[in-house]
Length: 544
Image 1 (cartoon, rainbow, N blue to C red):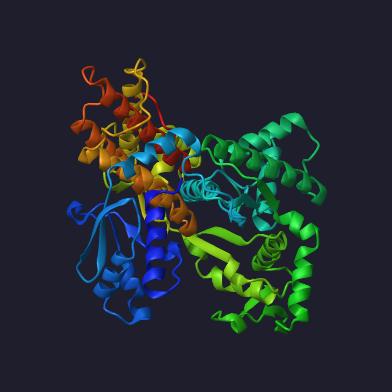
Image 2 (cartoon, helix red, strand yellow):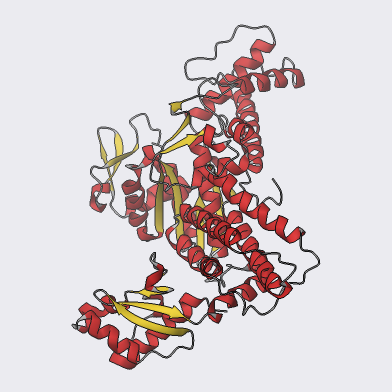
């Protein structure tokens, strides 16, 4: 069933064609719920949208649209201000959404497949330690984005890029070897660039028990052993913590595998054949200025080693070769300047750079009573996802990380996240859901209505309007990847429900017909709120 706003858009598109013989895609028409209820149920600026093309006064355009508008939905329509169209709908139009939700249940809001293949890459932290606050924000956002895009009909692949090559991995191997030697009573320094975490120490001592006296010397072969064990140990820990955080991946790509498959040399060869590389002072340079970068970039240093840009070029080229229509990377704030050279490399290799989207994740501070705090028990310098979830819970952690736009700095308020009051947005939303469940438990003897003529109260109409907005929110959020709009919707729906509940007696044993209708509305609201919370990986609890 098409939602009310979609039906209105199609009716307006048809009226525009009848009035002006002008084709207008209904998806381009903007329909909004006015903030002022005196302006009707819905409003559209379609007349202003057409002013430039038709070269007419928008109020005249609006009048012509009204004269050609044919829709049984509309009770009345008037022109306001410079040419807004304000619609009042027939009361029975809003009740249709209840039937739709009760039929579709958890599938309400799920859109037909659109055939667009999307690759979302997020987290991608080096397997050299636990995931921290920056990773937590990116993980919650990326996972929520994947959930929403799937509901919107996209074919989504969730990908984690494992940086399992390079100096940091070698430092991890050396650190494990040092701990292994220490476990045997030998002197061994971790070094300035080593990993001093308690978990690395524990792993080194564990390996000493499993393989006594086998890998004492830091030979190349022995370090291969510690490299493999270290990567597996850290990855297992990352996967365990992500699983607890309700974040999953479809593909785990390895930088080392990209290198071993010759994809790095393949990309370098193509760039060289196309004339984008040159040598200067013993280094190999990539002419990224040809693609708008502020300066050319080094690919191979004087010592013969590649810069970290090179495997990234090969990896992203590999993703393009896998046939995705859209690639999305979620990068930390310190990677902002990295975007032009990455897009330049894709363009140079013959890929469409516009298919590559990079969303920047701004910094996170942990605060309590307005003061920045550290909460780490084991590493002493940063708070891990695990520690945060132990303190505030997974629901609060996930909700707080996605309630603000990704490109804005975030202060994570520990005190607010643990409050059992309506000031806490996740508590407010979950309490609304629990209240809906409680109402239904009190009325198990009442069969839900199938027709809803009695639902005419202003608060009932407001609630039904908000429910039917859900489809639009899913579609628009998936297009823009603005996950925080789901949180806005959750808060709005919970607020509208509480207003309805305070104004309308749901269970009235003296008016069972109206009770059955209102219970159906409560059930529909509960389903939609649960669906919306699922979009951001937050549990819809049944009791609190």
